[in-house]
Image 1 (cartoon, rainbow, N blue to C red):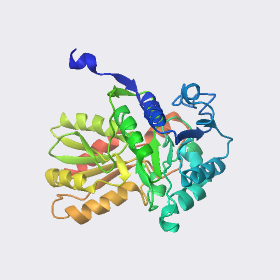
Image 2 (cartoon, rainbow, N blue to C red):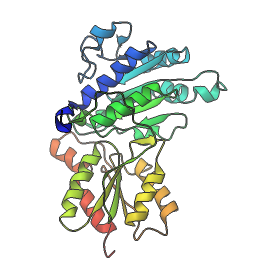
Image 3 (cartoon, helix red, strand yellow):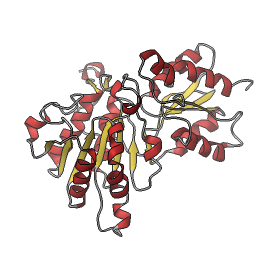
Length: 332
């Protein structure tokens, strides 16, 4: 059988389902709960068929009470189970901020190591689907500030499965941020067992003139911009950080020391963002390597618009990234 024939291409949402189902088959302590995950097969059909396979005790529909079911899941994790909590949107996690930040992230520390919290919180994060300002939050900048948790943001179906399996197996609380706009995207996902380790960035496109660093959905815009810039003779290296906690700053530094220029693309607002943190670290470590300051591309500093044209203008896009790279490499 040829390599091309052997490759299996599936959707991002199917990769998430496979990761959860495989881990639930291996470990009876793992279970899924959240709004519409069971009878309705998931608001975005990520958990389709899982109720039929695992039953109502392991795939649990909850009331519209994020604080309540998050707290219940944290208690279950403290007693030895391994819950997966699905937020229909990470925007809804804001009403559960107390249990997920004050309890899940701090329990191991506050209990002197007596109680861990092996729990995964996952769901859709960010804008792009005309869900307006209160349903389009990018929560990574707020939540990554908290010690005691890990955070992963997958870019494609391969990483969605591999990172989620790693998250479920981890003994720490993991915030797993997906994108509604990526759920139907496809790529090769092996049938054999694999995981993607946390804290290991990957180069999505090699280049010599400028490093572009990003996570999750914006990487699609970064790669598009890199293709357009190549026509101008500017070869960009696109680095996918994969996880924010832990952050693989070493791989980012290695790339910047090769290209001597850096642009960070972050779908969050710019103030006190992941992008600003990475920029600060790059400046501190690579001061003598940079030919220009680090440039950043963010969503505009306004509440997320509802209108489609305004929402697209508000988000990071290839045009904004190209402009930032041209500035970063100007006169270099």
